[in-house]
Length: 226
Image (cartoon, rainbow, N blue to C red):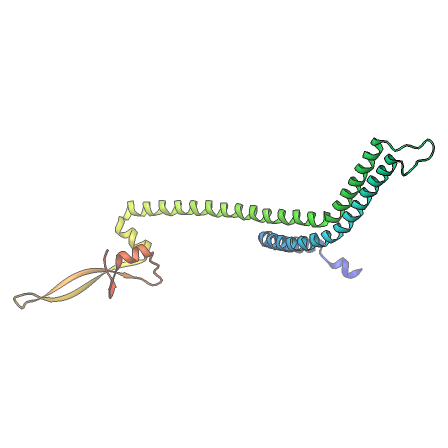
């Protein structure tokens, strides 16, 4: 009891709440996977149960056919006089129809009980499958909306950079390249050597070029000015 008194209840409840929140988030995050796995397992199990129910249903149908046949035979014997009822007893057409209806109702109820587990599990499996699809659809829609917002913000940023610093600076910042001056020696037809200055784009560290920009800038041997 002394040990229990030393425990800070608020601290304990805080830890429990944080743990519940942590695992609840993980469970929610993995819910589509859990549901689709449950749907797959449930579908297989429902099929197995349906097969077993079919075996039981054959016995039920045999009993049903035997009962209906007995009712028909009894009615035929009474009509032909082969079976004589007691004094005051009757077996009318309505009673015959009621007996047939009762036999079918009992058989239907028995079949429903046999197939109920398989049908219920199958419906639950479909519910899990559609539920997983619904969750993933909502998440994909959220991702799409986030991507559209990010793309719009990036395009606005590119426009502001272009308006302020020019298209050349915007391209250098976007592709992380820098124009570097290169001097080449060239001798003209008179034998005079002259220095020609050229500028070429050089990729900086950790540069990421898109396929389109890479094809524009690449020539065999080096990156060149677009």
